[in-house]
Image 1 (tube, rainbow, N blue to C red):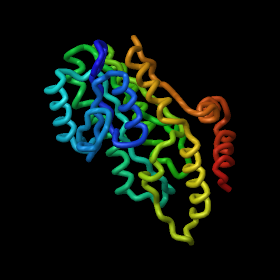
Image 2: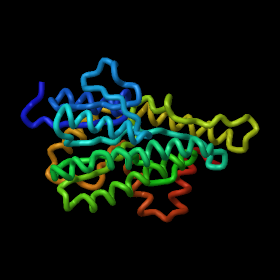
Image 3: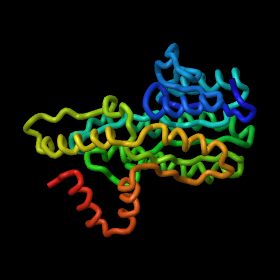
Image 4: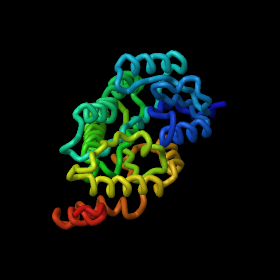
Length: 271
């Protein structure tokens, strides 16, 4: 059952984790929600399920056309689908690097290109791109992930100015650690025992896992997304995380670069 002010919302990467939490919450609030993933159709969810692969243009365009056919419009698009990766830059697989950028960056571009003609035609709509606090700094052994999310930030900033004349808005949501299954799905390099990075990588990777396990509940972010739906004008960036995660962004801006780097090395126990 939907309410008078219900919106038609697409959430990518909605099979589990943050995307599923956002889609569930918005559906519970009476919105018409389509949660997408590569193989989500047939799963018992509170929202409409729709198979869609953000690395495939035809898949995205077919999904958009289906929703337009069924609902007549799209109001909000949440680009949540993403892929994590952990590896020293020196040993990083170029194939894996390409997969991450194809999903996290080009996937966002593909989705925007598919839905924007419909939003512009109605002169309304909102694109919410899920980024990361990690986009604000090059995290050790997650340099490629940080770079991919930083790219999403810059793309969103450009979108905001390009879309302003058409009444369409865009914003970034930067989560810190979130209790999801990203640890299970993250691409992780297997380093041999004699690799020079092995010891520090293992220590850092355990800290990464621990930060996710101790992260915020996904529902916090779902509530924020709900609030953005009624905002007359969205801000560029909404950052949600634990106090130290948010403080780290400020410290990077205020401290000398060498001081901030030393703080990062100390936190991750890098010699």
